[in-house]
Image 1 (cartoon, rainbow, N blue to C red):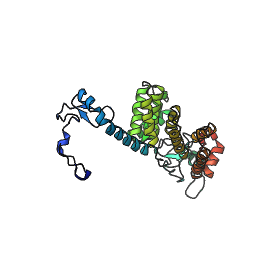
Image 2 (cartoon, rainbow, N blue to C red):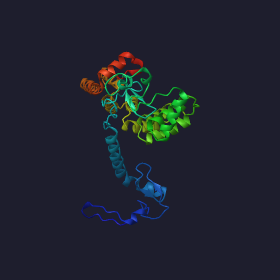
Image 3 (cartoon, helix red, strand yellow):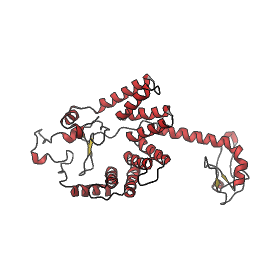
Length: 320
């Protein structure tokens, strides 16, 4: 290998593309017995790996520690909030599915207040009843049948709309709207949705592994997908991670997850932190901070229009 260690600076030459045994220095394509933990060094055989184990242990553990620190740094970042409502420009409520509505015509997500509000013309006059069934954003009339709704959903999915792809996955999971119940197809669609940035898609994959729906129960994989979802802003996945840490007795890490979920608008995590405080697993200051975070979230999403919608039909328009 072509290395220079002057002044503690290591340079790696082109020869480093050739696998080299960390114990005996043998080079060649047959040097492919990798360290099981760090995956950073290779050996020509199991015997060399065993001989080198005591020398490599400290380096291996240090590498794993750095990887874990970097992972936690990314994992425990507060993700950015969801996009604002395209009509009122207020922060979109987190509560799903009543806090906002996905429009099959244009693919926009509209907040509960704007979805409920009556449509008016450019002079502020309410339009007639025939037009009240239009999308408040693009003015296309809502689908009149499940068949028409499915046709629009498929069209959006073909255009790589991540919410449409996720919704199709839910249709296959539940066997609704003429779709056969097919967990394999649902998982395929959720993977696609997650790859396009949709956190809830990855949370659904995590739930499938946690509950064994369409796959074998695998808590390690469930946590992996919960983490992908949480880092994309999914508050339910964040709460699932907190629950997993709580079951493992890692209350400090659990609290971090719950705090992020509360700031993201998930009231269930606020209740959980309250319970942790009552059972001595969180301090009074922790609970106070959680209340402040949730109040800050409410201050960003509350509006008269959304309140009116919730008062009219709390079941369909409740937003917190």
